[in-house]
Length: 397
Image (cartoon, rainbow, N blue to C red):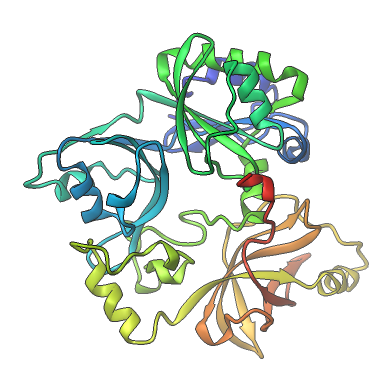
């Protein structure tokens, strides 16, 4: 049975259609408005809050905290300064990705990790012989993503402080509704945004204060459906959609190295001391790199129209993100799969992610994606394009 997060009393009152999903054992609002386009528009033109409390959260502290993180993470954690955040994957011994998330350095010997999957045991096993404490703080810490074009204005109104000096992937503490809150300049929408990390007991006080401050700026609560469309436009992949965690993979093709899912820039193969999976990734690179690569796919609208016209229909595309994988072809030969296909509301294009053979990963390559209309399967032409599909300057500014 799924439970409500610390914000549930406020969410229940707003989610009148009871459009709930499940996220790591918690009730997660799929949509609050009549349709998620209202919430998506608020991300791009105003501000929203998204309850991200179901994320797993861990505190790593002690003299050997950096040594543990460098042992586990693919990035150079020793270079992470206090009050800065890194996004990173972590791998098993075979160089296959277990999970990805953010690491915030809260102090010289204190870090906070976010993860999509439970990773406590993995961190504990790797902490053997080190002077470090690993604590699961998932239930102690509520999380509220304040995202959107006017998110900074809302945050400044809620805290009474100037936040222009906090850089992209920066961290600072503030006070909202009398509650001490940890704030990171991060998010999962590809827009300007912040994430608020709040003691669970004080979650409602912060929610109320944020909404009171945000009312003049058109603040909305937003559900997972709106965030899903926004993250695809921003080129942000999702575990168990674009890749399978090595913990859950039951076939070799379900295992992905960081270089197969666009995380190559996040791998520091030459950092001192190495990391779990480094030997396998060095071997992969020496062999010429992985056989498949993550790409952006832009589907031909004319092809979609033609498939509907064959049945005497105008195009009736789904407004949701279709996460289930479908085959990708090159001249009738299957060369990969496509995931998270959706209509990009801002970019006005049908796009998705592709995991395709390296030979067809170059931008401009022409492929075909399986598409179904009225139960009849066919293919729609698609072009490989660079990621992200949408890159808003205000995201970093």
